[in-house]
Image (cartoon, rainbow, N blue to C red):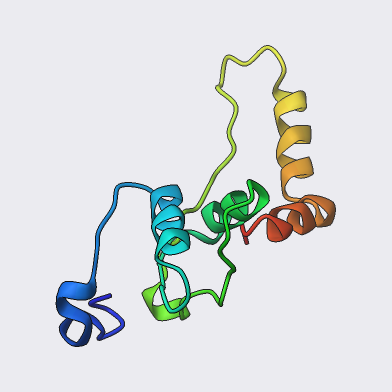
Length: 105
């Protein structure tokens, strides 16, 4: 909220909870006009579970928290080729489409 410049304007209206699912539950309980910030993937999971919220939009890139993932096999791996195949699969166009559909880009 601070990076968006909304912390001063919203002040005491801001409620902080522990998890993205708790954010979505709080928004659903408050009803129309309530807004919450959580990871897109968490919002999508809660929607799939029937939580009565909807994704309005992702936050602007300049305030996003980005999590990057790397794949690696240990030097002593018994199956380094299998690890490479898994890494290729996880970075394939098909996998990217699945990730995007669940809010992971």
